[in-house]
Amino acid sequence: MSTGVERSRGTLTSWDDERGFGFVESLAGARVFAHISAFPARAERPHDGDSVSYLVERGDDGKSRALDIRYTGPAAQNPRAGTRTPHRGAQSSDRRAQPSGRRTGRSAGPATYLAIVAFIAFALYVNANWPLPLWIVAVYALASLACFIVYALDKSAAKRGSWRVPENTLHLFAVIGGWPGAICAQQMLRHKTQKASFRAVFWVTVVINVLVFSVVTTPIGGMLLAAVDG
Image 1 (cartoon, rainbow, N blue to C red):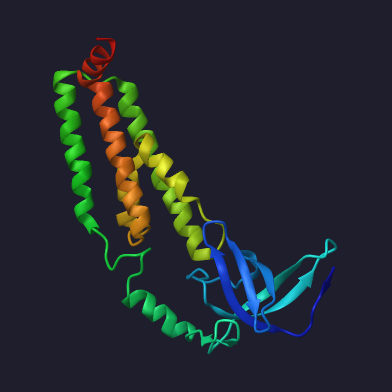
Image 2: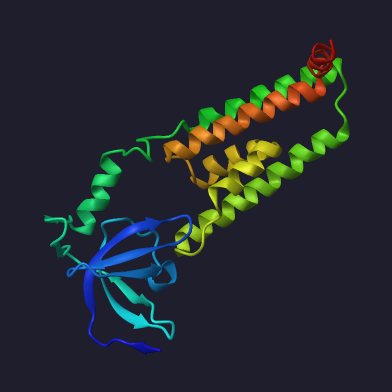
């Protein structure tokens, strides 16, 4: 396995933040594999269009990958695209100032706690009329605690620039009853509050969970079964 000495310059493309890898396209149009571990540790994750310099390592299997990836100042000209990628600082500012399809300008904030308050009120009403089994209470308590911990781990990974918790895992914890803990983690840790697509799916999991709770703990479930049998 040999490592090149001369540093190449290029642009990060096809970056998959959840899986932690993508490709670097050189000025000549050559693409090499880039893994998150080759980037310097920093608060902000890599993004498509980042201008970088790097070394190239060729393995025994003949495949190449980028090593010691460093962010550069003004982005290099990409002859294939025919456009100049903005300076990283300007690019980050644009990201903050202009919401894209992935992010919103602001989150719902502490108002999301109202969902927990409303659910507790509903649960108390249900318990007053149809006493809740203790296992249901335990599921919500344990799932919420586990969900908060998973959010905290993902927040820590984002700061370190290491492997992230897949979003599907976060949604799974939410839909099985951990969504109250997820809301607390989102607001207390300031995590996962800006990405519009994530929050849309998250609230779908909340609705699904509350519907299942209603079916399991109230006469609605019996009515549905009777309708099916009838």
